Image (cartoon, rainbow, N blue to C red; front, side, top):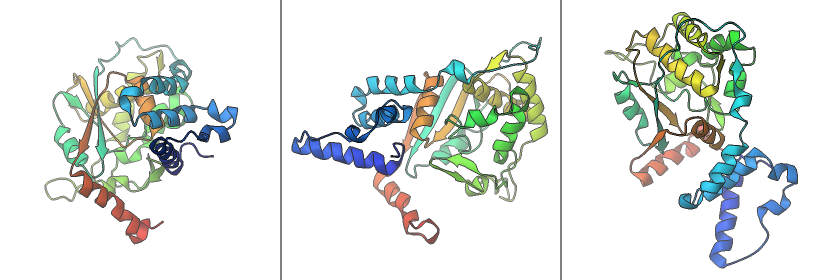
Length: 290
């Protein structure tokens, strides 16, 4: 049984709502689940998602779900070499996360934030699934020495927007994301491709990493922003990260908030009914038929 599937989630919620409406006390969906499934992190996340329909009553479910995630200490990776004598960089202390609902114009808002003198941000929605269960495992699979190289490979589109390399997104991977997001038609004549010097970025990132005895996903994420700004010769004292997390899967969202609990979240909504209509039109197009 796929507890993470959107179909299963809505089926369970519809069943609960129907029982509440009719005052029924029939069996719960949990009755068909084994003890191993009930004690799984994905079940706790499902319970939180169901509880989140009444957010003022969801605190306990939120705590249980986040406590079910792997311990931060288990995700830390140690520096096998001597720590650099250089002082640790000043990292941004504030985090703002941008969420969308339907076609709400988050890309426009993000573009207005880009190049702000006090805010660090990375292009597009490439990193919406950075805090999922697999991203950090993939980055650290070959140990400390290869993290920077694997980051550049895993997020190749950040350095060349014309790259067709797959990028994880909600419940799928997407190719040509830079092209789809308009990052290959920038500049005054809309004929330029957004590119960043990957070799210089790697050099900057490795130098920053060497100042730490160990790293976790959140610290590394901040270092990526610092290295990105340094690669572009932007100011190095930016105090805020603007993270276009967009539409993360539930595990990703909870893991992000577990690492960055002081994040201020902004959700954009524009013409909700029309947005929903626009959202579902892809079901009726040839390339998206199901």
